[in-house]
Every structure is written in structure tokens, then in C-alpha cells.
Amino acid sequence: MKNLAQLLREHPFFHGMDEEHLEFIARCGQNCIFNRGEYIARENAPADQFYVIRDGKVAVESYVPNHGSLCLQTLHSGDIFGWSWLFPPYLWTFDGRALDEVHAVRLDGKCLRDKCDEDPKLGYALMKRFARIVTDRLHTTRVQLMDVYNQQRPPLDSGQ
Image (tube, rainbow, N blue to C red; front, top):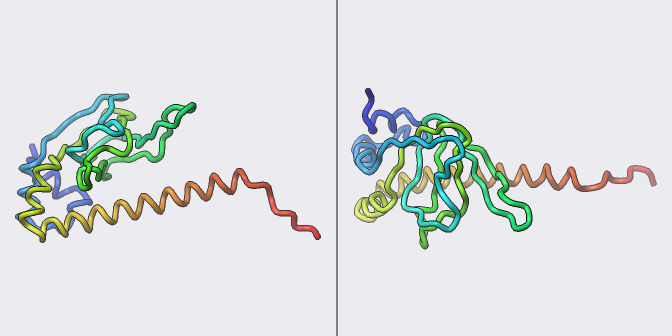
């Protein structure tokens, strides 16, 4: 059976991270399982952790008045869910809901924030990794919005 440090070492998010930092991060974590339909996070609730998805799918959702929940993105094995633990006021900006059984490692954000304050090298390493995730997800959202916009837009009149 693998320990948390070994599980994290195998996850793409942590590739190339200093062994000392990886061992510390593992001490801030615990394995968890979410059943299909279970909420992992709720929008505006305290965000004191993030999740390393080992297996399963997570819907990142937002509530739209008069519409209900809207799925913004589906995360899979190898993804990270949650960056709200990094930024005050430390509240979830989206819902996270298990689409099937999800196996994850829950990492304690407060534990990691405190350690990052003490060890700027760790803080910088984590911030670079999370910045990459934020950038990638913003790009994905932009592409999705362009698709939606192009579908709603009438075709250009090519004859003049």
C-alpha cells in the first residue's frame, strides 16, 4: 500500500517538486472518497483545502439564478480541484460535485499557507503550479465562450 507522499509523487501536479516539500505536503493530507452526487465543495463556504483527484470525475459548477447549477468544467484523474484556499477570504468560488465515485487526497490549506509563509521556496513552487492551472482553465473557458458565442451569432452575409 502506498503512503500519501508516494501518491502525490505520482500525480502530475507534483512532478519535479523537491522531496522535502513533497514529504511536508503529504503530512498535510489525507485520503478521502466521495460518492456519486456528493458535494466536495459549496460556493461561498470556507475553502480550507484542495483536492488531488486520483480517480473519478468532479463537476465544477456555479448556480445561475432561474436556471440552476451550470457545469463549467469536468475534472478527471490527474487534475487538481480548488485554489480558493490560497486567496483571502478563503471561500469556494464554485461548487464541486462528484460525478462518480471520486478518490482524492484532501490537502489542508491552512497547514500549507502557514508553511509557505515560513518557506518562500515552497510557496513559490506551489504558486507556479497553481498559476498554470488557473491559466489553463481560463483558456479553456475562453474557448468555450467563443464556441457558445459563435453558435448564437447569425452567419455573416457573404453576398453584397
